[in-house]
Length: 317
Image 1 (cartoon, rainbow, N blue to C red):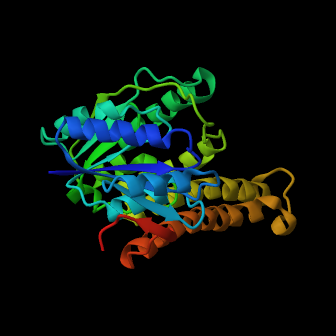
Image 2: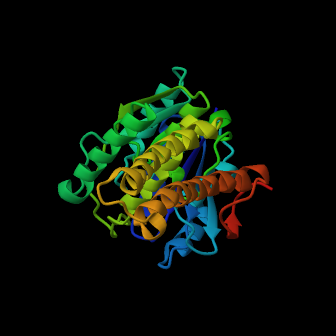
């Protein structure tokens, strides 16, 4: 078995050397045939230079440098594409994930699972801005998707290569990889992993990401439940809109024919409301969801990458 450890990097100059040493130590102690694949997502500090030095000093280290910042999903997608291992482990570069948890993930994977997700049960982050929003988001994700994971946002995960090759990432869907795997029949479990407080650099998390998570979750729900039968989804929407249109139209008819003081509907807002409920509502929802379907088709049918690489080091031809 060959192990590929993938770490997306964005402005983590203070942690890279230590992280590389820790991963190498763990892999050698466990006698893994391994590679460490760093994907630099357009860092503007000295991270690219440090990664080049690490690759020069250790042939196990492979480096992919992006032309600019494309996001974590693109970085993981590139890592999955170029990884050579039968088992793939992803880990954050900020040292909050512990490389010593890698053997436990691999052992659990060898029990017959396709995806093993880390659970930061003792998470060492801000309670108000990180832990509470994460707990709420994970509860909603479990409710909507039916995938019983406590910490979908934990980067520390292990995958079987043959499973991860079937998953295409774009947008910000990296946090939903287990859900995408569940959609194609992956056997998924989770184990508790250690989590350390950040001691270097600054967090890349912003509260504005919450809205993006909500939109991505709606996309995932659509893909899970309606990608093979979209008419059911649009049909339910149409029923509700038509129901509201019937109410609006009935009120308009009552005012026109049965009210004590009959009204002329030519200038009545109810008439226009009835029409707009049907046209505008369906158009806006259909346009947004059809755009997601088209985007998925665009990336998958042509095997198009969502990133642009400027340089690679130590990668096989």
